[in-house]
Length: 592
Image (tube, rainbow, N blue to C red; front, side, top):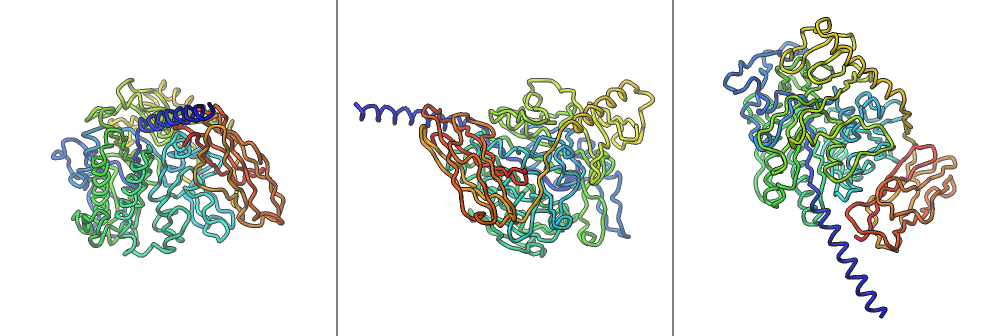
């Protein structure tokens, strides 16, 4: 009888596991390509006006910081991006998609669904920071990859992080991707013109100095090979995946491939240096297009293109100033016909290309020109498509754009706030076609006054009043939210990075220790944070460390209820010090 019961239990568990895997397979794969400093007019699908043969090849020129007769005209990407352009033909393009003015705030908003001001990221993070207190994205935030990981996704990042890096012996990875929800990371900690520019895999430094041009010329090829390998691994494991591919260029300096490389599949990656006939910048644009084509080919070859949402966008507008380090290569893009570029809140600085393809789900050749969207919308939109919901314990500034992308709903009226770099001041707010700046000027930014030269404030008092109210609502919301900001120290909480898999009625343990002597008494608390409620901490809720035992691992046990339901989704447990200096997440699943 006991044997029969055991067989029945095993059979039932197998059925439940099969159900959980089927559920996981139904979730869409997500590929999100995030460019660096790529302008609104640097994608062929965004050539202006249309068709391209009517384009006058003129517009606001770049502003050189020294004399030069070799500044490229705008819109050189007209014939350079056929693979990226295919996303618009086979999917959608948004014409009013917003981000931030500079790198780190844009990435913080993308990964948290929250305004950069709200998460305390006002400017660009530099290695070393100020004094010995290096800052990065607070680990108390809940990120897009962490939410997707809890929902059963494999989460991988390839490329530029730029949300915190501590180049010190005890804790060089405190704010890196593997501490913010990504299972895998391959890439660089920040921009390619900064010091401590290492090539890193997960938490191992592969090359401490990747700045020489001959190394940087390999970057796009290396990133692409890593992205393809990640997709292959997750397909073999039958896991839905989220791939965040954050290219380091077209940030200056631009270094396109200077020779051919051999791909893992035996094919050849071409030499792109000089291929555009324009500049190193547009050589890189052409190389990125080749990379996009390689990823699309991989999805087709594996037969998963129809279950993959593919997104392409940028962190901010183009860097329009030329100076010594990029003068020779003329590394400058174009935001034509928009005014301005990186570092400012004019449309050319904060409005970027946005393309998305999901065969069978997004209609081909969809142009969305009456919907304001932005990077903060990625978390609620993508988490919703994965079967989850945004975190309820904090303010999420983004909205779910899927009803608009899918054609289920017309444009949703909403406001979008823009913050000045470094100061973090609310510098402008957009709603529908209107943009109100901090000094009270009102511009119609929907193809009527792209250059932001005509102030409509006197003629449109109702629009001004509406935007003033929207701006005040954002300010009140920011003032009402208390953000517990963590600090870097010489120690950190150490836990395993792999997921826990627990059968119903059983337990699994993980160990917690500190990386260095804290020099004080430290309490570490472990709590169920979100997700599957059949998983719980059964022992070790609070651990105590000090100078005598900081390197002695202490065990924490997680248990699955006897009637726990095996499914694709899991639970997130937060491991935090009592002063919230460090927060680490560990993910647990039932029945795997």
